[in-house]
Amino acid sequence: MKKQVLIIMLLVVFGSAGFFRVPGARAGSLYEYYADAKVDQLQQETAEMGKKLKKTFSQENIARNQQKIDFAAYFANLKKAVLYAGKLATYSQYREDLAFARDNDLFKGLPEEPSGDDSPQARQEHHEFVEEKYERTKHNVEEEIETYVDLLNLALDNCESMSANDLSGFLDQEENRRKISKWLHGEEFQAYRQRAAELGRSWPGIEKRITGQCALWQGRPAKPTAPIINAGLVDNL
Image 1 (cartoon, rainbow, N blue to C red):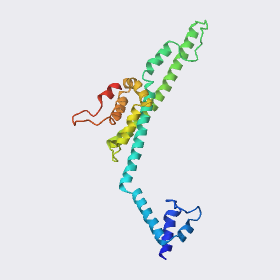
Image 2: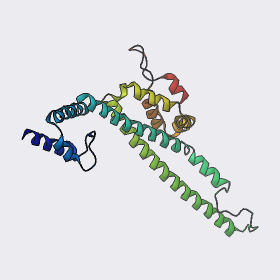
Image 3: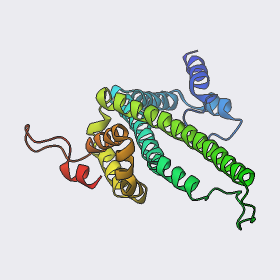
Image 4: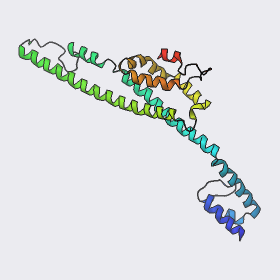
């Protein structure tokens, strides 16, 4: 009777879910395997399963997994912020660029060669065309800028919230610091650094927030009075 109860427990808890692979048990014959097994063998396997369950659901393992989840979410938002910031920086002088295009007839759609018609009506039509192209392009650019700013603020809000309330302790993990350090010296971040000054001229608040998050991953200050933000990093940005 005890053996039958043990067999049922093993089948219900582990067999159908495939939680553990049983040596020698072929597909479709799990019941037969347990039915033919000796009680002491089943008890040994049950004890081993218990150990694995205890390890899987231990507080230490749960905390470690939560750190991985938190770090992955944080890192994804930081990388998105840097990506969006690089794209936003290209529009740092959009007003001057559009005004130059308007004043120098650089908008697409204008005749490449003068038509020879210099009448007041032709000049008026030309002026209206340029103004319409200018206003339409300006509107499209400002919509795109607004989208990037919204995406940046969302990503940075997530980063700042997680770093200010690091309940799982992912900021202190050396493995995470190595990953961030490698990324900070990689091509993706270096491309942003080349545009950081442009970003700072038009959106200094966003540039400052990115610098602050990157500074969190620099070496810890040697003395309590030492500045938290690496001055070299700020200067380079």
